[in-house]
Length: 237
Length: 109
Image 1 (cartoon, rainbow over the protein chains, first blue to last red):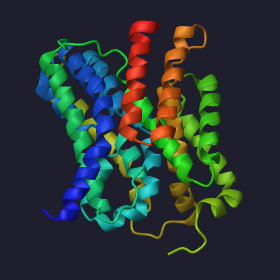
Image 2 (image 1 turned 135 degrees about the vertical axis):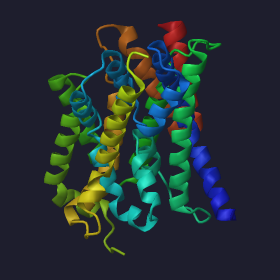
Image 3 (image 1 turned 30 degrees about the vertical axis):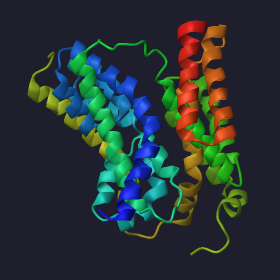
């Protein structure tokens, strides 16, 4: 393994640690629920490995329990994950150079992987493509591992983990701060927060994501004329 | 197991396929063609908007009716932000903020 590859792995591992903490309670919880309705740990691991989408997997528990019709399953899955359509937009050109690995990164593009992809900062001793591959692989490994563990050990956990899932909130907060510091304008963030709060009032906390992201996109498109010169450097290479 | 193995596999397969297709969609639409300037603009401006939305999403169950319904979340988020502004170490900020939240929900509120 070359030195660049090794330091890329180290960087990816370091960046993945906050998510390791956040995935611990969530993955365990998913595993415990799977076990509760009668699936052993291999089913939990298989689901996490192939679907790799937290909120949908918790909904799948009720699909399994109720034997939901496949058509309903598909509609619910598409609706619940629709925000992911927006994620790829930022990587269309970058991923072109990644060959077949592109499909692995696309399959692994959860909220958390996306957050790591967005917060990558150019560094001389790193290979960006491999940083992304390593961090995505690590995240999928953590998620599947904790799911299996949860289903394996059941409810036996030696300490009170109430509140540990706040780690993901903290991570998104930190990455948001990083973006505010690096960007010349905080307007996209302010618009998104205002639109989210408005949509929570209109549609409730369970259904606000898609309308809120759509509204944000519409506003950002309308503000393109003033915003674009601020965010893009004058010379395009 | 409430369902048979093939039934379970059908549901897992359907959910995996739906998730992957949605993640793949923008790449299919703009395949090898040049990316239109509007989409390129959205691509560079969306990450901040999406992550801000995810922060709100994580805090969506805040209830301003009772102190215990909002204080732990808001205090721990403030501690996370303050730690990060002071030290700029992601792991430290996440661990510190989470520990603060755990103490607040387990012992204080």
